[in-house]
Image 1: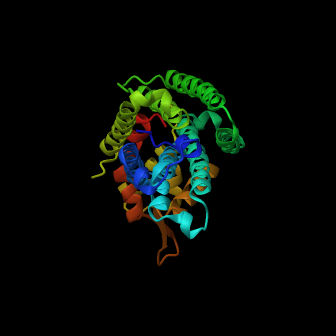
Image 2: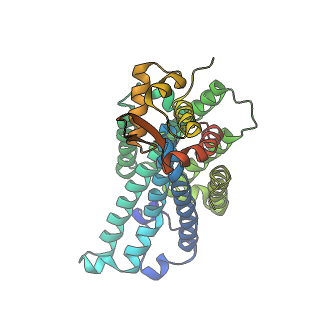
Image 3: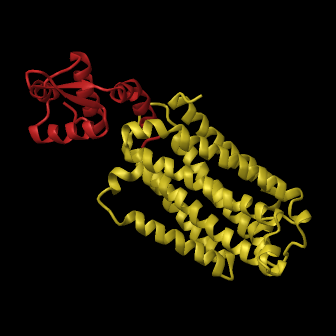
Length: 244
Length: 89
């Protein structure tokens, strides 16, 4: 059974009909996206009150990161689901092959942009005090996320995109470790481990989308682990905000 | 004495207003341990955020009172600080 990931849609195995589209692996992907979206939105809205009271910049970027995760995962699966379920290709008078190609490329572009920006915002939330003098940095990060999205849909070889993401991962890793060491927290805080796991699973998610066969066996494990990390962050947010 | 963060300064000013249940601007400036210019900046910010309100009395003198929103900030202050520390923001 083919894994219904973004690259499959834009690649050679274009799906024949909506029934196949909604079966097996795609249902799993839909469920996975649903969990991530719900967790992200609960984090976003759960921190609304403390952000509005404090106007703290770190909180602002932290919340934005999870809003961007929610948007990214919405486009990853749900938008495909809605458009195919309601058969938008007929309404738009397009051939199914062209329709799936446009749909796949567009959702992939949006997913890469929003998920990259989510990671950048998460990094920014821990580094904003050091980076606040660099006013243009956030615009550069947006530009870089757009660039990554473009090479992911225009590049013939997904390995180029994968390689650029791995470089980005090590960059994110270095920032989190440096930030954690600088802050010298004495209390038992394993947040940086959570963030590192989040970055690792972000890379695995990208691989899963761009090179589906590469991690076919571990797809369920990736979905479960990624959901687990989001649930852990949600638990920490609920515990610290007292949100019911 | 360690440098206070913006949130700590906001909390300190609001706490003074709460403890006095209405205070004039000059004693508030003195008790806040801020320079006049910094105090003005913080105070206008508190007014804009509706954490405090200024009421002019019959003797034409201004008094500063805590609002519901200001009280909410004081109640949530510990939560905000714990959250920022927990997530290293």
